[in-house]
Amino acid sequence: MLLVPITEPVPLATDEFGVVRISKTRITLDTIVAAFLEGATAEEIREQYPSLQLSDIYSVIAYYLRHQTEVDAYLLERERDAIEVRRKAEKRFNPVGVRDRLLARRNAQG
Image (tube, rainbow, N blue to C red; front, side):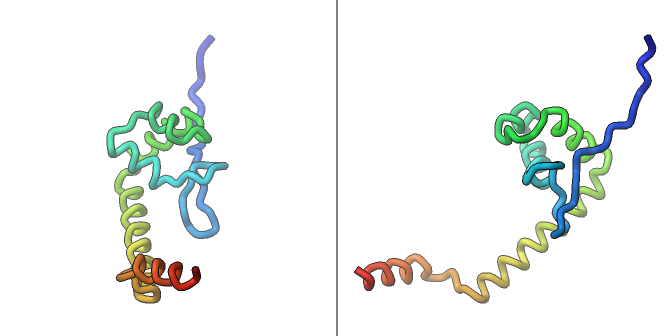
């Protein structure tokens, strides 16, 4: 019997916020790529994220390797967005002295 190659869809989906996730999970593309770039094998990633199928992890890694330029650009944009969100949050809620303010508030209450 001759095996006929078939095209398997990549298990990635973009949510309503523009975040690419592994289909039907909350795990982001960022997470898988970061783990892979840190040297984790697909099996190690599966151990860390048991909601993922091993075959999906391999598919996502293969997708990353085939589309590295595009994925890296997406990841860079996500990093820029995170920096901007952090900057706005720190401007609105000054992180300097947070621990001292929280301890003072707790001590004042009781």
